[in-house]
Image (cartoon, rainbow, N blue to C red; front, side):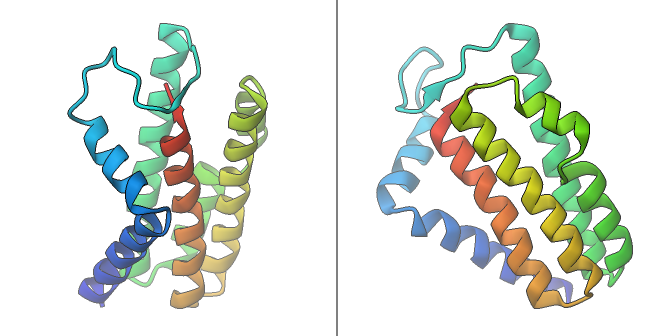
Length: 152
């Protein structure tokens, strides 16, 4: 089951990137070869160094939460995975406050991401693997959209 889950997640992530167009994949891939000072077409948020580090830490924590959720799904522990989705990806009051400090467009993606974390938590409670993977794909889609649009 774990190998199947990994293949499904990989296919979902790749199709999500590919669905956004080959130009996006090429642009995103070439971003890694650019120097920090060059414009890569994304919208800069103009964060202070402290706020930038805070946001990067939040995004790493979100990625760690997704990894934990996938591992728990593979182990069949949907209840614990659901708890993590709500607590670490969902729209808590703290996340609502943080998201509201940014531009309107960035806030909209952030709020949609966190709402999708709650939807993921609901899907995981159903213990339906397909429904849960579809919800996880939606959540990861907001990550992809945000990283393709904004630069910290």
